[in-house]
Length: 373
Image (cartoon, rainbow, N blue to C red; front, side, top):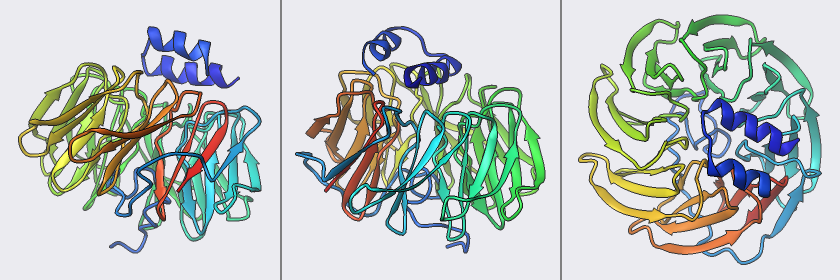
């Protein structure tokens, strides 16, 4: 079940070749939420965590195993509860101190969508085509049906939920009721999660475009990415950074959608970029981890992993954290890319990690959720 679902996801994303052999052989806005309760750390999807994590990985403090059903949604934390979505369609709520289950909610499809947690709701999408809103006891508040699977992660602003579907629409839903406010049609599936930048909603589509909309769903600009876009953009200042399936990292002007520069990597960029004040860090399906200067696109450092990378890098003041499809969780020095340590989970790591109060959280394809300090 697990391997079938992740294979279907990668087939949709257009990836073939050695990875399948590997998989089959192993396995200060009022609505802004806390940095650990949203995909990629914040509403700009920067992938940058202000707090630091462990710099060596010896033994996990605890592990949670979800009956062999792996996870591709990143674990997020709110009020000491971890929320982890799994391939069997279950969202697990775990106690952060010991990994003990608090409750579980079942959908009818795999959960690749990283949940958004607010003070009142838990919101996420499922492969069954629905967007779900739960309360903090795991009870359904509402669900909204799209016309295809929902891989993207939601964003909330000014009482509305924004989320894309593989049906090609970006949806704006009322956060309290789930009622449709508007939808915007692209010409292909939307895997990319929405970024909030000023008054703009920015996201990519498999139609090879990057879109910027206003909060009423009207197009502000669109940029030609040259190929399908699965990755979520990251925004800082007037710059939008986004990777493409053709292996290009694009820097786009946030004001008008004009291309500032493009960097050609060795393989496709499925993972979302991570940014701090000076650098942008990307990972490719060829296993390269690359740090670029944000202004010049000059390579600062490069690290070659032993396997493809689909997990998005996590950036802190000290380190870069990311998992590989051979099961390794890597920690690299943020300044020079030198490997500080690694932990072999034994199974592919598809989801990006999370840093919470000095702890490292991540999940793997055999259903385990790990916590390190």
